[in-house]
Length: 212
Image (cartoon, rainbow, N blue to C red):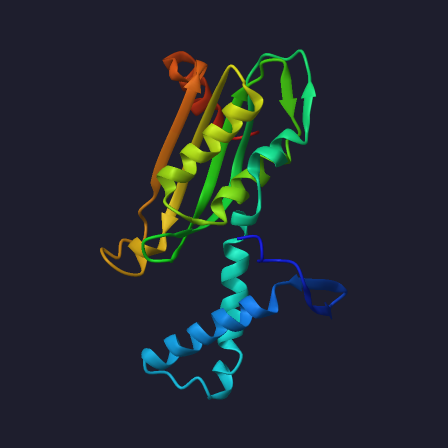
C-alpha cells in the first residue's frame, strides 16, 4: 500500500501557512466513487452544495488517517540510534494518539506513555512519538497498538526493558453501542526489567506525576 502519498495535489496558502496534499489521483477517484455511493445509500443527496466535494474530502482524509501503512517504524527508530553509556529509565509521556477502530472505523484518541532502559544505545526522542503515529495511523485495536509499539522498540533498540501504557477514549463506545461518554480504556505492555514490579511501579508513578 505504497500509493497513498506521491503526487502533489494542492498548494493553498492560507494565512501564511502553505498546505500541500500528496495523493495518487487514481486512488482518490476510486475511493471517491465508493463514498459517493455510500452517501446515496444512506439517503443523502450528493448533488447538494454541501456534499459536492465530500466524497473526495473523505477519500483524502481516509488516506491520511491510514498513511501508517506506508511507513516502516523500525527504519524510523533505527535512523536515530546513538551509542550512549546511560542505563536509567528514559520516559516520553503524554504522546497524543489518534487512531481508527478497525471494527467500526470510528476514531479513538488519547495519550501514550513510553519508557525504555537503554542497553548501550539511546534513540532521538522525537522518534518515539513518530513510531506511535506509524502504528496509530492504521486501522487498529488499542491492544494491538500497544503491543506493536512495545515490540518495535524492543526489537530495534534491544533495551533492557520497555514499558508502554496507552489511555484512550473510543467514539464507538461514546457515539453508538453503550454510549458511555466518559469511559477510558487503558492498555499496557512490558518487556524485560518492566516485568518486575519495582521497575513497573516506578514507571507508573513517574507518568502519573505532575511537574511542579
